[in-house]
Amino acid sequence: MHDPCEGIPAACGVLDESAGEPASRRAFLREGLIAVAALTALGVSAERLQAMERVFATGSRSGDLLRYPLPAADGATIDRANRLILARYQGHVYAFDVECPHRGTDVQWQANRDRFYCPKHKSTFRPEGSLIRGKAARGLDRHPLRREGDEIVVETSVTIRSTDADAWAAAALSL
Image (cartoon, rainbow, N blue to C red; front, side, top):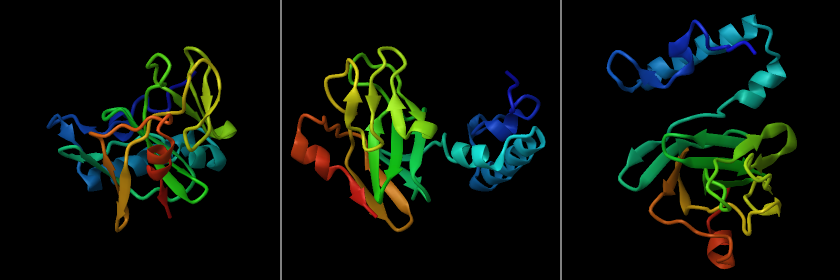
């Protein structure tokens, strides 16, 4: 399979390689536009580009808090650097650990099926994190979050299991 980022590494990364630090917002946006243009030139459909939009991002950290732009549409943003998933679904936003609660394998977002999937033992989860089926004994672990203007702020020092039903339900943000 052809890597659409081949030949344009800066457009597909989030680091300013010359400084070894996160790229500036302006550089990130410029390079993102270059990546979109490259993918379009390779024949990637507009529908696929939309499904890929904001699949990967890195939150801005301040201590135990992570900040993300408010998701514009339903889907999942995976922050591999901070081991967190921010999901928007049916007017709500959720923040999850990236790991499956069964054995700690990273879950994947399957946009075409509106679900999270654990490739290790085949557990599946709804977009709000509840377990559909599989070897996992509970839903995805959530973190408390709040909205501040056009940003979502996630408290990473607190992890809430779905077995604590009231706290788990409260770890959702209505838009």
